[in-house]
Length: 328
Image 1 (cartoon, rainbow, N blue to C red):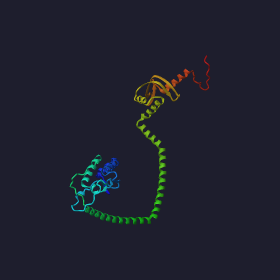
Image 2 (cartoon, rainbow, N blue to C red):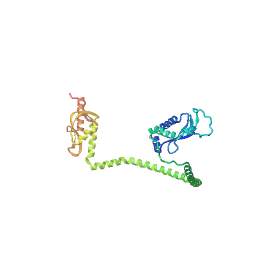
Image 3 (tube, rainbow, N blue to C red):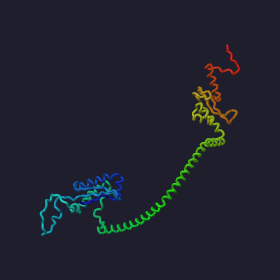
Image 4 (cartoon, rainbow, N blue to C red):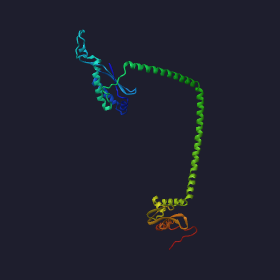
């Protein structure tokens, strides 16, 4: 049987593997082996991934037919034997592994592997291969080096084992120290959790006061801001949009048509083409008011409420102690 190794350069094979084409490459190699040596002659083919470069080891049985290549080269006078049928099958590695055949294998294999980026070696290269003797001498040197490495590792292993035995001798003491430290850490962790909980609760209780302190500081810096916020909230509560409030705070007058809500009376009141504006109180320039047609909106709501009562025929209740007579 003949062993054949199929592979490429390390860089090319890693590129094939990373691109996800390794299975296709294997199938292509199997197909080439069958076509080159015959399906029946291919005994096995296995992919090896445990070394630096992926490669395939294939085993081929050199079964051939036809006359032997050396049959015509027999020396004169040498005893000749009866030739067998030239068409019968026989084992002959020389026919399969001849120089011409090997060159043909390299050419056909290179042609099949081009799609994976593999290239044939330079034909006629003067590169010399290491002789078998040199190969075995190199292996011997490597073996001696490995023996030396093994001896060093054995010494290191002995030192490690000694340290391990020493650790086992002290494991009880170390275990007690570990348990003691672990208990101490757990106790401190619980104390820390308790302190963090207290800090969180204290912060939650203090946060509103802190926010109010910050707000009061802002009010001191900008005296009108608090008043602007108050009148802005009033505008929002009666039905004005944020955009409308911004315009009125910039001293713009708006024309209003629709319903405005009175929180005091819990009632909507209709306004047609009313003029809404935020302006300063006449007697106190640090106070603001929302007006409808020049009337404070609170007074405007009261007026609208009285008009509604009159429209519904509802009279104002008499004051205590006074009798209301019937008007004739």
